[in-house]
Image (cartoon, rainbow, N blue to C red):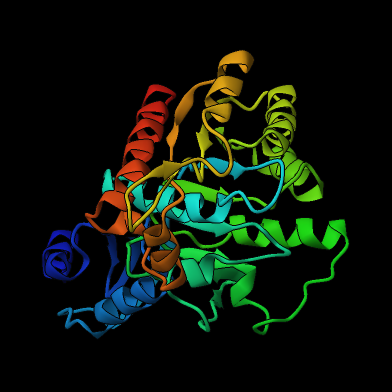
Length: 319
C-alpha cells in the first residue's frame, strides 16, 4: 500500500507545496490550492499531477480550492472628461506594480474605454473561465480588463445606466488571480457607474485628477464631495497638464493655469499628491502603448512618485 507521505513526496516537485493528499487504498484524493494562479496555470498544474506516476494508485481525485483574496480598490476619478484621468490610471497601476504590489487595472470608463491602447493590447479579447472573465496580460505586469476588449473597435456603447453598472460588476468580479490591488479608471462625472461602484464594490480610497483650470476644479470638487459623502477616503488630488516647457526654447508656460488643484486640495482639506506636466513625451508614449511609468525617463518620474505616495497610503490603511 502506498502511504500519504510517499505520494506527497512524489508530488512535491510538481505541486510546490500546493497539494494536500489523502490515500484510501488505491485511490488518492488531492486538495489542490490554486490561490493566485490564473486559470491556464491551474489547468496545467492539475494535468501535470494526473500525468505523474504514483505507484499503487489506480484512481486520482482532485479538488481545487483557493483562499479568498481581500482586494483593495483604488478609484481614479474626475469631475469632467479630458483631464488625463485614464493616462494617470494606467501609470499609477504600473507605478504601484513597480513598488512591489500585485496590481490589476479595470477600465471602468464604460462609454469611452482607452486602456487597451494605453497599455499596448489593442485588438486582444479576454476569455472567460468558469463564467468569469480572465484579465489580459500586459507587458508591464499589470493585467487589464476593459470594455474596449469586449466590443468591436469604434463601436459605440449606447447603454442605459443599469447595463453599464452590470458591465462594471463583470469587470471587477473577474478572475484577478493574485492581484491584491485593483486600480479603477472611472468615467468622468458622478453618475450611475460611480454610484454602483461605491455601493457594491466599496473602494478603499479615491484619487481625484484635475487640470489647474477653474472649470475642471469646480467639477473635481463635485467628485470629491461624492466620495466624501459616501464615506470613501480621498487619497489625494493630482494636478495634471500642469505647465508646458517649450522643446525649442525651454520657456515654461501654463496654458491651463498653475497651482489651482493644490490650492483646492488645501481648501478642501485633502492631500495633494503632485503635478504632472503637459509633456509631449507623455502623449507620444501613451499613444504608442508604452506608459512613461514603465520606463526610466524624466516624464515618468512624477507618476512613480505619486505611486509611492499611494502605496504608502495603502500600507498605512491596512493594505
